[in-house]
Length: 261
Ligand SMILES: [Zn+2]
Image (cartoon, rainbow, N blue to C red; front, side, top):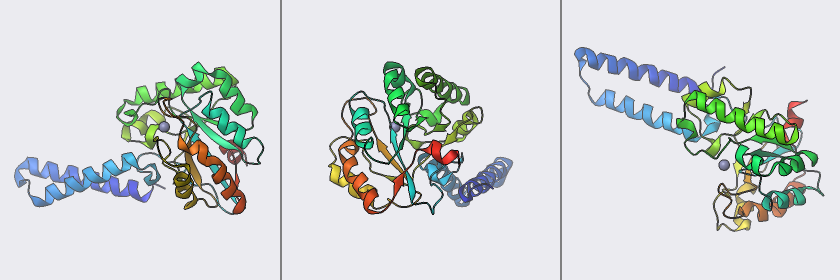
């Protein structure tokens, strides 16, 4: 069953094509046509930026509820220092996470992929490089980038990731076509700390996450910066977030544990 936003997008697209065809046949291009086209442009752009709308591709943005479980997820790694800091913070706890790694960083630090695996966490992929224009790339390039990242993880630690979080979470009709050639599940999020930018206070990150830290949540954090030029403040916020999980009786599970049930 297509998502409501996908149905609206399809209707708007058909309406736009119809009005443009009518205008081309001499019926004129007036305020109605302009309004419909404007709504189409705005709506289709929203679909690129917000994966939870599931306008172009189905995306897992929430776990099943009722088990007091959620999924902590970390993007943009691995990094020798900050990823290991995250692993060390998680190690003495019952919480397991999912790391959406970049293929080129795994090739530089294959031992980190093994450390993530050995600690019982799930490995997903976030692209081969952090391509901010991912949603504008051709379907062939999307498929190629995913295959390359996946091969890098597999070569490093023997795990073949089946979870994919697009860079910036952006998707498009081109992304959808590329993904149709890959056997991956797209993962979005339902909570985020906005810790991909430097300079934010860890307490602010934790407070932001806390608002949506609930049964079934998928929490977006970062274990490395996109260009490895700072330590994401979410790393220092993690102890507070883990304490919140304990206080609320929630357990973070890796996505592979969810998939095998
Ligand atoms: Zn990212």
